[in-house]
Length: 371
Image (tube, rainbow, N blue to C red; front, side, top):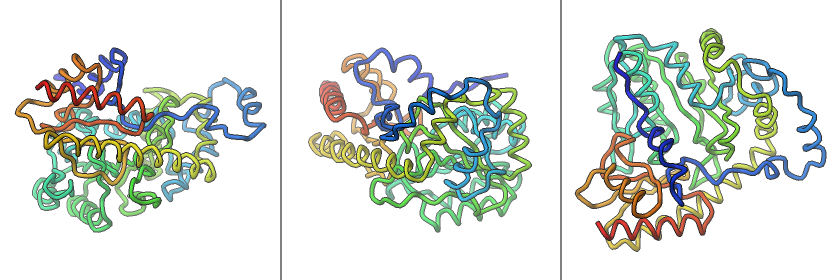
């Protein structure tokens, strides 16, 4: 069988530890363990007393209940996975067969696209329109969705552009799926990273019966090292995904589940979201100022969420070539637009330590000016 590599993750795997500045990651500066535990004097004792035996394979009852509350679901809908990546993978494995038709949002994180291609599916994209602040082209969606379309995949808020779907846009996507009986896979890992509001982006959950929502602790919560994710699905599909989960990973780590229970308590959620939104808002201000100083070399449609800037560069060169030049001559790793399905853009993470980001952006400026 032909195999489509995951271009973005291959890029990061090869180069993220070879540069002085890594702006190719997709989240905020990670939370330290001491930050997560906070000022609870018994938290460390409870952590040290945790058993390192196998945890419940589908997730602890307490954790599944907390995840369900985050999406407005019930614990019977939730399966805990090793990151959102496993949740996406076992969902596609369970729903998509050779010859099926899958529709994906682009630009986007191309894991689902690659998984569907590797399953033997036909994949089409519906675009977010750069001329309209990356709003979804709903006419294009309705043209590409057809009888027999098996699945429509969206990311909300979007990676890499940071757009948040409006209620009417969600309604239109649900209507397109319902018209042909397609499933919706809603990747919601960036819920909670809102830049312009403190209101969490509503989940797709409850809007449609043929729906899987995916989430995780890596983005809004700043805990990528826990590798803790989940899917929310109808109970029968959750059970089918669980059987694949047992083949793929058996279970997420027991310590990750323990720490996830702490992270998803309502009081801790508020603290973590406040911390990361502060990084996102300050980081974007600095990124916009950097773009404004570029004298027309760079531009951006301001994102509504995420710690990401999908920056347009105005040079007649492909994004992989530009990204390699920045890596080789600037010692900075960024994401190339080609890895998200759009050329002449770079994905730049800004929700990191101020001095680190400023030094990296200065290095990028030097390289771009030389080009």
